[in-house]
Length: 458
Image (cartoon, rainbow, N blue to C red; front, side, top):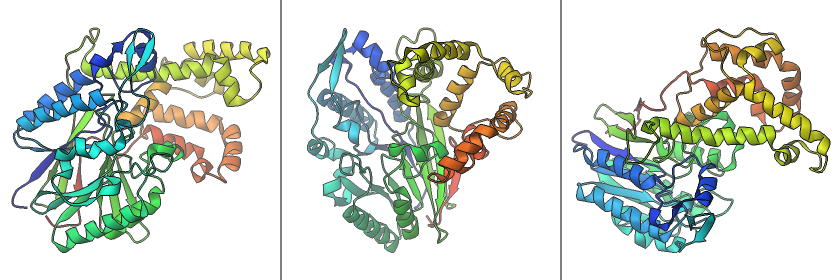
């Protein structure tokens, strides 16, 4: 590598062709359950792509899947037009596709109706996006739609499609893995550094993600071991719409780092610029969409994205607090047992007004004055949001960490029963204090900007 090499990473653009219909009761009902902005995708992508196009030092862009909303043919056609805009500005684009690009129930939203529209068969995607990576491939695993491309002198991309069986298995097939390992060896033998991109995260980026099935690749530990032990030490991922940088070290002492990036069209609307330097390190810098052409109701772009995310989580919390059917499904008992309905409603009303100070008084622990008047409900929303936004701020020494530690201490009579029972089948729940506290604070603070050392000399 004769000089530094950079690329932009854009994940989960989920483009939706607005002419299909993106307003009305049906759309509003759907959008309340979605972290990403859907009707707004065109405006957000245009704003982000314009900023990327203006960077004259970086001409490569990687996009690891979920290119469109729900596989609408019209959305693919519209998204390709946006890729052509980048091409016209001198950019080279490498993509892989993922399940949103062909699966689901493609539809438009008109009034109170979801109107079915033409979808896209998975087998058509390679031809549609042939110009964006497949055409440049120096090796290809056609059955999985994976490939290797030479990005610049001395650096190769291993683009791995991880659709698996297009069902429960979201991972790497045995023959696909064998092909990938051969490509890693060939890169090293020919004096090339090689890194990978997949849609699904390789590594669970937070303890809670170990419990969510599609928050990481199927059999992720086996896959991570094989890759790291073969000398692959860096992978870029998406899917979970989260900002995270996560390391994993094998028993042999080989480490692989998963750089996951937030959704391009949903809070925090992030994208990254990655630079390979001559001093054997990689600089990663994150950006967010600063503005886009949409009626944001007087909000800034970031306020708008956060409002959309918080509304989704708030609705979920309200459902748990008020929804009788939801409550009985989660905690047992027939829905016809009306005696439970009154206390559920009472609990819901209490949660709307309960502050951290009041909770501290109830459980006999002190709360710092700077946070004592915060509503428990609002704190819950923020803590969930922070997991996805990254760089979780509540580390040791902060008032929130102190309050959470005291709360967990007061709950020990309950949590220890859970630890004894659940910890046998799930080691993460054997220490609930550590499990919870690790999710609210990140001492390393590198989810947005970081420098990684690599083993391969560039």
